[in-house]
Length: 265
Image 1 (cartoon, helix red, strand yellow):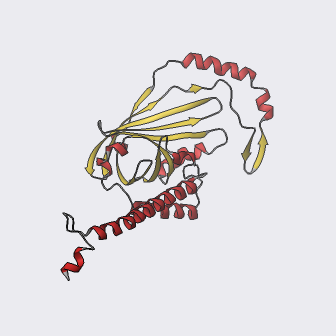
Image 2 (cartoon, helix red, strand yellow; image 1 turned 90 degrees about the vertical axis):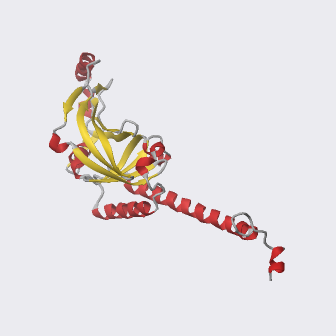
Image 3 (cartoon, helix red, strand yellow; image 1 turned 30 degrees about the horizontal axis):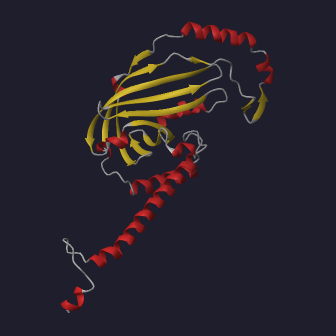
């Protein structure tokens, strides 16, 4: 009965009854809030899972499978369908949290030794210049060592780029004001104290200070990257304001934006 319905529903310009819209809006908001909560939970679980794995080097087979499952779930709800075009999200400096990239394993293995640590591995993206810089900093007892690789890229699809590496750059070592040795180290399962070594480091610290003065202000060393190792591709499978997941011809990468709360978990 048309007259009976007129008092209950007043149609708007889109033909949808106002009463129906009012009823639907809270449900839609609840669904969106539930979706956001689920994504936030997945991100927290992923960051918790990769914590303590030395960027993936110490992750066992079972943990790797767990991490991959979380990655798959996040990729399925990727909020950015055209990551390469979302320049406001993609641009910036990204800190590596986890990787399954086989060519990084020797570096991560060196960083797992008692006297050498991987301080950070990061990737800076600038879509305006279509450039990428991959940077690594290693921390040793005497100095921090930093090196990077610069590259340009071409867009091949809304989520895929082709990367061409140009050169490697080795920065002069940043000498520490004092020798930084751990209290002890693990050698084949046995803890060995370094206290006797630390007590005899006076002359060595003077030598380190002299070296620091010598190399201070030296320009970085630039090394061309051979053509047969210069090309790669990268597929961005998840991107939001603080997390990026990428897959390349070398494996899986999970990164957090510099300054993201995810880095504080």
